[in-house]
Image (cartoon, rainbow, N blue to C red; front, side, top):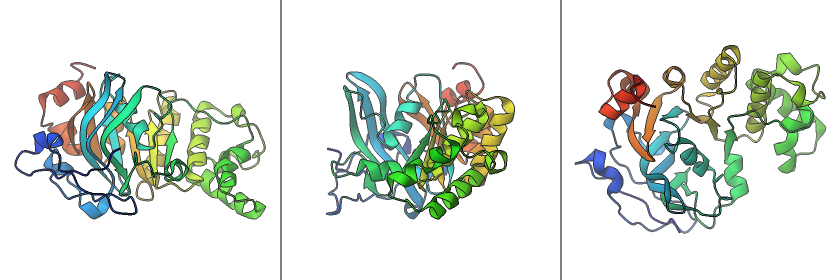
Length: 298
């Protein structure tokens, strides 16, 4: 099991991911995430502001590397973009945060990945609670074959909420948060499948918000959308920042630069560079990062 935390030495931060210092878990299963200098200094986050933390984390498909030696922190209330060429491990890492890779028979995790101080891969982790805390929006809109109303209510009903007035309140609040209420308020019992692609994606976001997560994962949420629908999603990300911690995987460099506070560049399963978005896109510290964001490969 993954039961250690890591202390990152300050003298060589770019080699920090290889340093491991075992530590005992607290009795309640929460992990001591020790303060450290991050892989790059401008990505450093105060320990009390860290909501997601990886230390020497890796995920493997049998003998094949998905990601390995990932060491990074994500700040509460921020937007973090993960960029990199196809097959570099972006989505693998994202899906590990709420253990969406569990159904892969040959998959295995190593190292530490924690959300809110709780080791995600600890045997005592309650997956229902984890996925309530960490919601996800996928690449293709995937509304249920139900009404708009029932899509948003699906999670709250599973949580035991039955009172109609309370469900009505949740539906309106979440559809407003997803900037969809004004478009569908008179058609809440219409099939969600009748909505446009952009509306379906915003409905999926509203459905995610209905369980009141602290973290929202977005796996290329705009790749199947037109530019107008993409702009609506980007506006929503900006509006939700602060209330939610958002981690977005994107192939769109301009989108990453527009919406994120920090950016992580992955390549061949490794974290190459991680830092503030404005610095990474204007003055990358690693030539491989510069080559990618300027289009020399990808």
